[in-house]
Amino acid sequence: MSHVIIAGGGAAGMMAGIWAARCGHSVEIFEKNEKCGKKVYITGKGRCNLTNAGDMEEIQNSIISNKKFLYSALNQFTNYDVMGMFDELGLSIKVERGNRVFPESDKSSDVIRVLVRELNRLNVEIHYNTPVKRIGIRDGRFSHVETEDKKKHEADALIVATGGKSYPVTGSTGDGYEFAKSMGHTVTKLSPALVPFNAKEEYVKELQGLSLRNIGVRILDGEKEVYSDFGELLFTHFGVSGPTVISASSMLTEKILKGNLTLLIDLKPALDEKQLDERILRDFNDNKNKAFKNALDQLYPKKLIPVMIHLSGIDADKKINEISRKERNRLVNLTKSFPVTLTGLRGYNEPIITQGGINVKEINPSTMESRLVKGVYFAGEVLDVDAVTGGFNLQIAWSTAYAAANAIP
Image 1 (cartoon, rainbow, N blue to C red):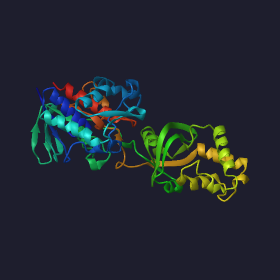
Image 2 (image 1 turned 90 degrees about the vertical axis):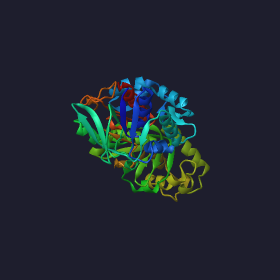
Image 3 (image 1 turned 60 degrees about the vertical axis):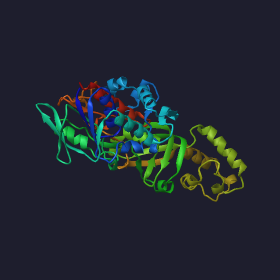
Image 4 (image 1 turned 180 degrees about the horizontal axis):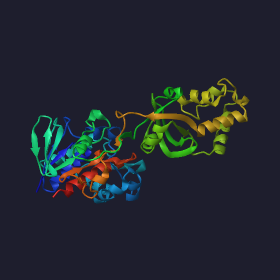
């Protein structure tokens, strides 16, 4: 059996450590932080959306970059294998809307706890506060790592699971990309992904903190629709966030770099324009002697009403029974297509993942082993692979880590 070193104690690193040890190898994890799983801890708003319970076709269709490359790894260790493993480790899980899988406790710390407990049971040695700084190669194959304290640690195989560049406070500072380059690998263009958008309009700041549920979104590049979704959206001090637009960011990185995009929010997606007009008419008839500004409580959240009045162009003090059909149509159109101009993406301090990474053409898709250096394997976000939100990115981490660990001779 081999002596295996794993650089990084995040999701991929912990999973790789467990499976390498279960294969009978002696395993050491070198983690730059004081504990494992710092980024796992903050995923899913601290709840950890650890995988998705959809079928394999849904998993594949949710991958944005290099889905063919991931085919083998995802089938070696499927989402159902992941759920079965966590069940075996004693973690109760539940499935929510969109087939998103969470720990029943809603605590990401419980996911980390059961993984670390299993690592300890398998006698995996974890070196905390010990970042890997250099990788040694001898005669075209891996020989050792050098840590920050200048010590050399020899081993038969290395799994690089250092993550990307997103949320650098968790330790994801792009180390793995530099390791890869030092071994002759190429790294594709990097950009923040699954990240909120900046917006142009001042009224967006007025809506800060407003969360909209069950709304429809469309994003236009000029006249062309380039994205649509249904779900939740959050207004922030800088723009918009929430699942609907965060998923869009990964697909529209190149387009937003070239110019502004238009986000249109359908505040009442369950109603077509005729039905919405009838609904507004009913509300207006119930409030015919009120001022326009006082007759919208049943239609919109309180925080949104002043902005809707401003954008509609209807005098706030105008009596409801004086509002014309043309003005009412403007309100209908605004409700079905509330406009926000998207001007760019937030930086690396806020994205869930990094788009881009180690060129997968230089990696064996079945084993995750480098095609350039024998004995070096890669797992997780350090690779040029990513997916939309919904547990798919963690599934990629688990699957690639499993493939790497099980391929080591």
